[in-house]
Length: 168
Image (cartoon, rainbow, N blue to C red; front, top):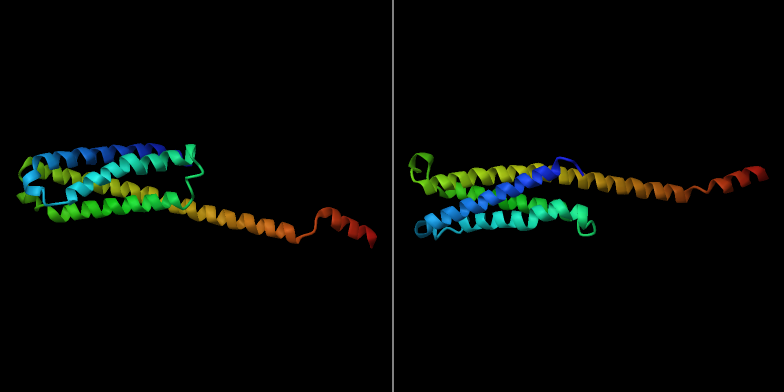
């Protein structure tokens, strides 16, 4: 595994915790006017999902539980998490007022939440790229390994070749 992945997972967890905090702040201060918007609750879910499920699984499963860190599950969790963050920050950006009309502190909290979520999405795009490259490389290595075994089975052992040449 690449040495920079674990510090990046810590950064992803920190941004997820920041999302939880900003979402809780917005829910607490704008409860009456934003109680109709489920996007805030979705962003709270994204932060919890990333902190509790995605980052621990993606960081610890390859080390401690290699049987459940299947080569297809890690890219799947990366893609799902990336799509959750993308849909969350775009939906939130579509709902908030334009920057000139955003004069109250809770609106600034919403803007900060959008920025944090967009950075989190970009981090998952980055790690997702390497997860897919790793999946592609592991599939090529397994194909090469299987082809090598088939070629070894097709060729007779060296002892049979030498005994056949001695008979001639």
